[in-house]
Structure formats: C-alpha cells, structure tokens
Image 1 (cartoon, rainbow, N blue to C red):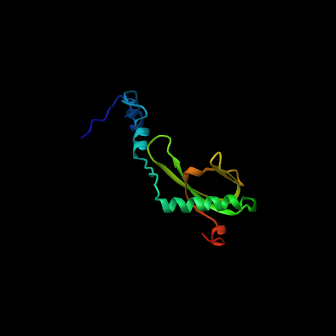
Image 2 (cartoon, helix red, strand yellow; image 1 turned 45 degrees about the vertical axis):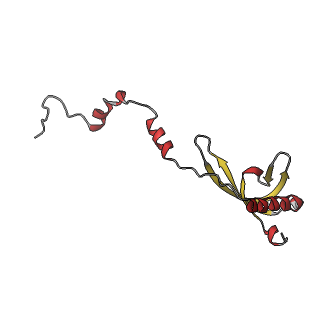
Image 3 (tube, rainbow, N blue to C red; image 1 turned 30 degrees about the vertical axis):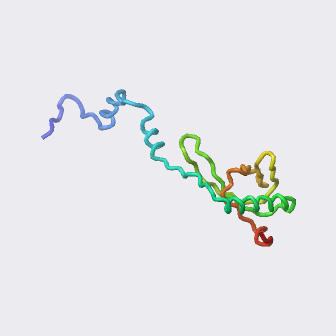
Length: 130
C-alpha cells in the first residue's frame, strides 16, 4: 500500500513533474531528433537523352512564350539544412523565359530556375514534332 499523507493534500502529477523541469539536460533535443528523422529526396541526374528532351522543350517554350502556353513544371528545391531536397510541381501559364538569367516565370509570379527543372509538360509539345 502507498503511504497517504495526513497533514497535507497529495501533490498532483503535473506539479510533481514540474519540480524536475529545471533538470532537463538539453534544450532543443526534441527538435534535433525531428530534424534527423525528416527525409529528403536526392536530385536525379539524367542521361543525355533526357537532358536533350528537356532542352528541346525549354527551347519550344521560349519560341512560343508570347502565346503564354499552359505548362506544368516539376523542379528540385535543395534543402537548406541537410543534403537532398524536395521536388515541387507547379502549373500555370508561362509569362517569360530568361535564358541569360536562367529562370522562367509563370503568370502568378512563380519563378523556377531552369537548371532545377526535372520535368516539363505542356499541351504545346503534342502539337509540335520533335
């Protein structure tokens, strides 16, 4: 049997646990564990054929940029804290392609670096022979 005090009320579990909070060994430890468990994707390197196809598609988009074609773009975003990153997919109308600064802009002001593009789709490509 557990001893029950007769002179004062029993301390709650929360109050009892709070007594030991100054002795937490490391602050931020929980965040470190979560960061270590977070996964990232590796950037895929493509062979010459896939790269040539992407280059052709970018060239076709640049030629038809004034038509503001619909485009779906998948691109790699490097992670700021660890090796790897994530692939993001956006969809919209093309606003401009700047080949000297190496980016393209959609009408909603989304900027995509040309060197980060991993996939490019548009109805425009089905109407043009490669």
